[in-house]
Length: 65
Image 1 (cartoon, one colour):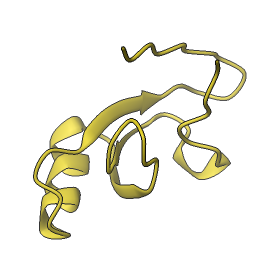
Image 2 (spheres, helix red, strand yellow; image 1 turned 30 degrees about the horizontal axis):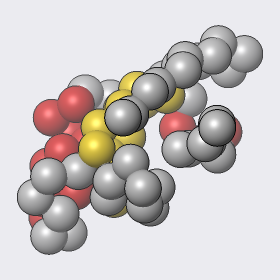
Image 3 (tube, helix red, strand yellow; image 1 turned 90 degrees about the vertical axis):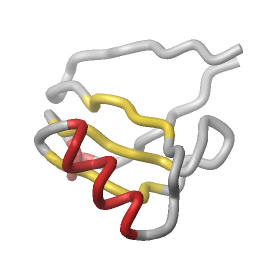
Image 4 (spheres, helix red, strand yellow; image 1 turned 180 degrees about the horizontal axis):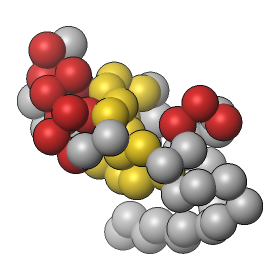
């Protein structure tokens, strides 16, 4: 089964923090992982799921078991 975690052109080339692998609500974003994590933690999310959104037309596949 495939799941799109980030479905927005807004985050190309950025790191994105989402609540969890099950809940893809975006809680932080930035040019570095630290920026995305800091924004998420300011919103009260202590252990977000962090990923990199590749540039347009590049596909990354993530697997969470």
